[in-house]
Length: 390
Image 1 (cartoon, helix red, strand yellow):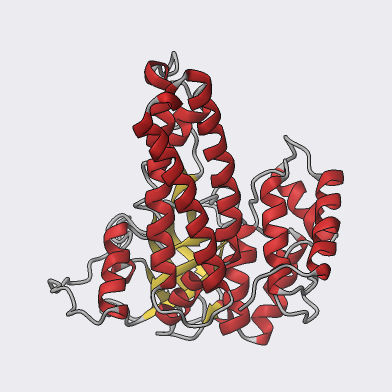
Image 2 (cartoon, one colour):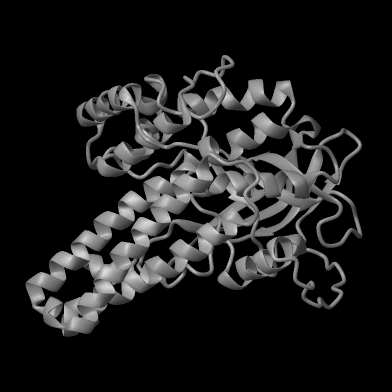
């Protein structure tokens, strides 16, 4: 697909830039900001125009919006999980009733979502989930188990949960994709996970008999794996290009620091900075190349491998150009509030996890080897299903 931006795209860019300039302010409360976006139709640009409260635009215009948003001072999105993960999944696999119920509140910024996939014993090995969903006589599902690394669960109204709906099932069989309300006191507990950076975007979520309605099962019993894999394909779409805008800004700050500290005079470090710039440009063109194509084998895994390692190396460079000052930490590592870290320290500490979360490098390489290159499958020890932890 030709991703050159035409006159209509540039007109849309001017509209997006003007709107963001007029409305985006630092320090806005994130839920209010989501409703502001929804009120003016900026949520769900990639969905079909089917009366869900969104407006439909072309793929190139979705790229334009993502890039302009990343360049603006607008706050980090708290509704992107519902907009970019749940919504495309419901459009592909949901019933008309599910779409009608859940898509308009997402488009309006009224309902926020989190993703219940990873578990303490099944992070990148998603087929090993042990959270159980048992159907009661009244038709509802009773969910018991634990999820971990659940982004923004402390803000979410709903969680899409991958759970075992078939007792005794193993691997990717017998799974269900359930839409679960978070407001269930005594049945859903959220515990923030404090990170090295002092922030707590991730959480543990405990389900103790949490309820989900039968009509909120997406893809039917046993269809959860197909739905879950489809969702992961949506995870690395247009948002990857917006992510790269942020990466470019971070790289620019590292270069500025290298000039200010004199580290840029080191020819080896200078070569690493140039390499980082060239690799970022390559990632952009690769993202554009695969964005308009359907069924590019292994593309999501290749994308994750590229940006995870790149961002981690940038964190290492950020500390190198700072020199000894980068080793000076906050006065109180035990403080409950976020630490007073400078930009380079935060980048280094946070990027340590880049090659793990969202699918570890080892898992991505296995996917490419087995599903793209056709190499023999890795031998796997049989694992008996265990009762979920309480």
